[in-house]
Image 1 (cartoon, rainbow, N blue to C red):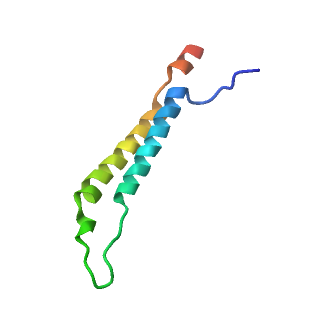
Image 2 (spheres, rainbow, N blue to C red):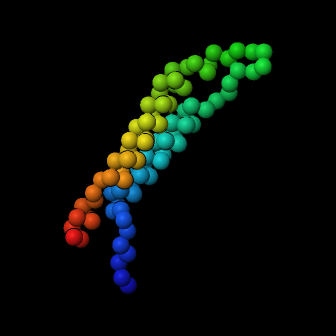
Image 3 (cartoon, rainbow, N blue to C red):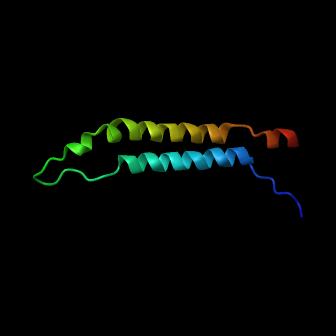
Length: 79
């Protein structure tokens, strides 16, 4: 059986999967209830939603770019 030639190596797929998990985690941290019609909920301005979640999401996007652009050792050895 012939070996398949993928554009990315195993390392790339692992980095991309970790980036997707990180991005999803960041969006989950951002979610939650908001303010109602006549009520104010100060939880919408918590540090988790304003600081932590966007940082986690941005780390995920940077990991995604790194995972896509990284040359895997498997692909270099095949050349």
